[in-house]
Length: 388
Length: 79
Image 1 (cartoon, helix red, strand yellow):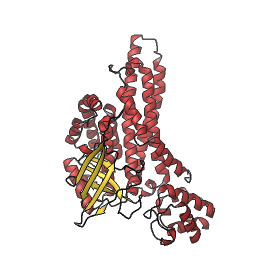
Image 2 (cartoon, each protein chain N blue to C red):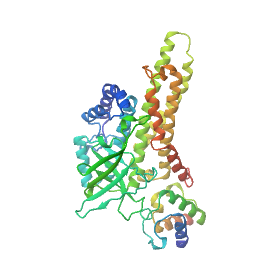
Image 3 (cartoon, chains in turn cyan, purple):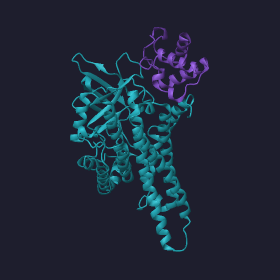
Image 4 (cartoon, rainbow over the protein chains, first blue to last red):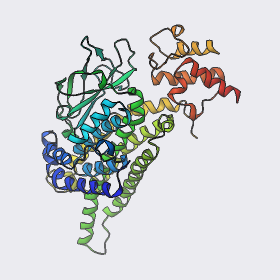
């Protein structure tokens, strides 16, 4: 059962309120100090917005990906780091909802809904060159019957602020690198030791430090489906859809500043169309492209979510890759156009129209999970894929 | 056909195990075939058997074992 429209609207109103009253005022500090947006996540927990995707029968709201994407967009509009953390969390929740079918995971989802747990992910690993579909570390069986996992992760976004981490690993010591499982790692069995810092141009509040992760858990913490299946059907598409929603929020924030600026210019000399208005027209056309791309892709995914044949097809994988590449390219384009419209007002750091933070965040979109890697993967598939 | 499939797997599958040691039903992905390697296997199969895998067949399950590949090729060769 999914959330009714009225309930979904209520959640969205709460998210809009939090975005304006809590997220926006903290955004500058979060960026400057590269700190976790703790007040934003306290507020999101308070309104039960972390567990939205969990089915109603397990205590969640049974929200659709589109409903979560709307909230992600609102958060991204005011603080891209907050939006991105929310997006990453929800793609982990979606993976548990769709692929954690065992009694253990159903119970864990109910606990998440009850206590609003925040999930992080550890997919990349030192030594695999960024290829998340390959693991070196492995699940080890202990004599005690528990399992143990030790992983050197170059990045675990907000790892030290999360309540649990989903980590990839080889199924067993004898498994090849691509035979991966996803393991739920929680305290007290979970230990994190930081191995690198996070001082970047943008998305500074995601605190994406590197960690040595050591986890001891029960066998039941391994998800039922293989990581390959979880990734292609749920984790990758939901990530790309929600990240794109964050970037759409960023692009919209830049566009809003430009629109406001042009209107103010026009009011100074009624009857004379300011030269920047033409640039605004071009920029708004790009923003419309991006909106249609992101919202259309989200809507289609919700329609296809139960069609395993579609979700495991090559055409779907290509579409999800292309969405990420297009949206991350469009956001930079729209922010650049806004900068030209705003001129010095956007370029200055001490102006209310400043685009500094937005520009730095926007460039992270193509870099965090590099577009070149995604395009290489798409290029491979296009060698055999036939358009219908 | 069986032999040609196994030759292609040996050449393009980049499996960490010997192809001859795999049974017909063994899962090739669990045996270590990456999705990158599987694309090369598809290309070589299309060339060898003069077929084209349509979009509906371009999924993991079509290429998950020697038996599955043989089944897919016979289906395409008949039509």
